[in-house]
Image (cartoon, rainbow, N blue to C red):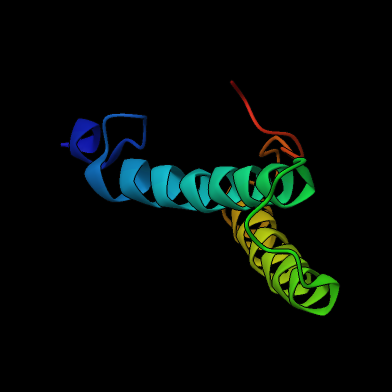
Length: 81
């Protein structure tokens, strides 16, 4: 039966991949916002730069995965509130 092989938002593996990819993107966007907030608990600028660099890598990797899997995946660069 051909209907068994349809891919849609209810497909478990596809749904989990989409959710985990965008969860990583949203967490890095939240991190960027929190690092730039006044009163941030991290005051060492070198440490902030290091953390920001790692977060850029993870967000870029997640966007690469999304593009590689779906090719038309939205590019999210801001935190949704």
